Amino acid sequence: MCVLSAEEIRERIKRGLLRDYIDLETQLQPNGFDCTLRNIKMLKSAGKIDFSNEERVLSESEEIEFDDWVYLRPGVYKAVLNEIVKLGTDIIAIAKPRSSLLRCGVTVETAVWDAGYEGRSEVLIVVHNPNGVWLRRNARIIQLVFLKLCSETTQYGGIYKGENL
View 1 (cartoon, rainbow, N blue to C red):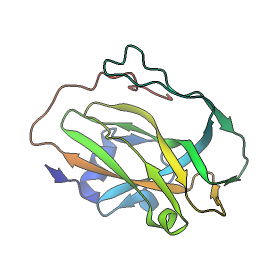
View 2 (cartoon, helix red, strand yellow):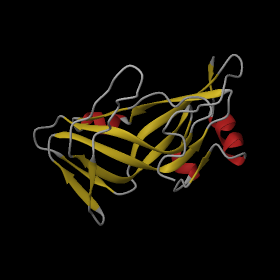
View 3 (cartoon, rainbow, N blue to C red):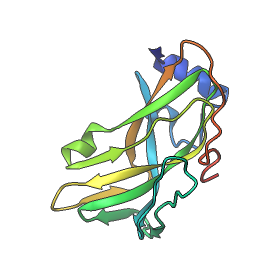
View 4 (cartoon, rainbow, N blue to C red):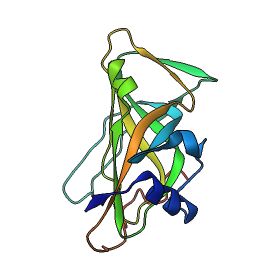
């Protein structure tokens, strides 16, 4: 496995790796790509997770309306990203919060983007700062890092394929 460089990411973007980004030159990083905030949702109900997913119930959420800036109190929120990711069967992605968020007492939790995934992803924002945080629409909140697999794998077939498209 190896991490894609900025030039490798740029080449894959030409072939459809990412779309709906705001500014390629600003968002493209030496070893990743900064993804941006499209909207924020507040969790409104409990979820249910089982082994087989037969009884899975996702927590309901409600979008928080905002024009330019949004203030988030301490707590947990879902964020939808602007960028649409389309991974081939030879690549996966992981994400880390941008360090500016961490310095404000805010983190982002994510899962692995499996090979073959396509969609406009959701991530979890956790505000630990007792004073809250202000986020601007389109703020860069995570850096997506792409890992090339040693060999191709099967296509992702989970329920989140095509989410938020």
